[in-house]
Image (cartoon, rainbow, N blue to C red; front, top):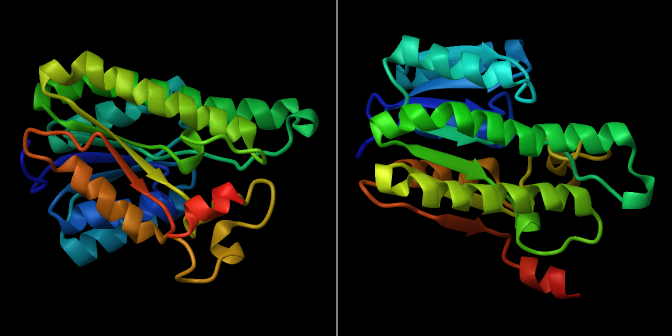
Amino acid sequence: MTTLDDAAVLVTGASSGIGEATAHALAERGANVALLARREAELESIADQLEETYDARTLVVPGDIRDPATSAAAIEGVDEEFGGLDVVVSNAGIGRGGDVETMTDEAYTAMQETNVDGTFFLTREAIPHLKTSEGSLVVVGSFAGKFPRPFNPVYAATKWWVRGFAHSVAAQVGDEGVAVSVINPSEVRTEFGSEDGEPFEERFEPGSVTEPEEIADAIAFAASRPGSTAQEIDLYRRDKYADTLR
């Protein structure tokens, strides 16, 4: 696949933030976009925008990425609706977490099931289709998946897993024409963090950290490489390393 014109794309976590911005970025580049998330009303509204703005074909797939059946149904639906599958964007994720000693079983389980299990289920279902299309899997990682984070160790560990898994999958399927890319943002002004505190879109002023559209552009770049792989793209706010070393 060398272009996104009429490409069949599935985006998870598509109801807001990076996922919503990615849906727009890919539709603007000619893709037909399937939207997966739990909030159906939000997905329907975004699908309407994509159709009206870009004349894109869309598919709304409400569901919970933690359930293996969700990924299976979503990818089957994309294949039936669009006639194949060219790009999968694994974006769904939750949590900042907190101290290990005070983290509840429920919070730990939800983060593992969403960030780790959801990525696995989606990738498992997508691989056979991406082999056929010689398509792309783009996984949203994190700055926290590359550097130790004292204030969210469980979240960080899930993103370390995601990065390691994606790179190992790339090694497994690369000789069959499948590109696997990891996009690592630092803070992005989205709903992220709302599970246990103030969301980043309220915590940070516009222009102070990365915007969802910047991550979406990187995802679109990775998704459309003609025969090559953008293996890993880091998108950090400019003072992020200084902040880490303080």
